[in-house]
Amino acid sequence: MFFIPTELGKIFGKSPVEINKMLEHKGFQTKIDNQWQLTEKGESFGIKVENSAFTQLKWHIEVIA
Image (cartoon, rainbow, N blue to C red):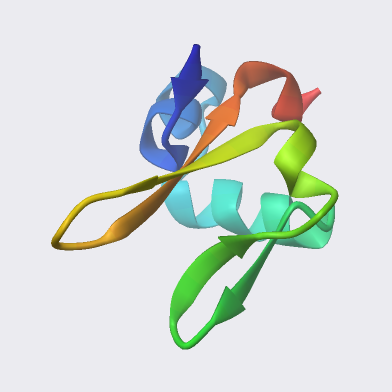
């Protein structure tokens, strides 16, 4: 099961911004053209979900450990 940063934040008592910064700090994602992108390291823990309006990254809960 994969979670968006907002859901992870609710589980771990953090804001989505804090979760995204932590994921960036760990090298799992990087911001390109104002959008988060998976890094090669992040592909082990996350997936990219695309629809017509936007792209969203979802994460395995183990990414927080």
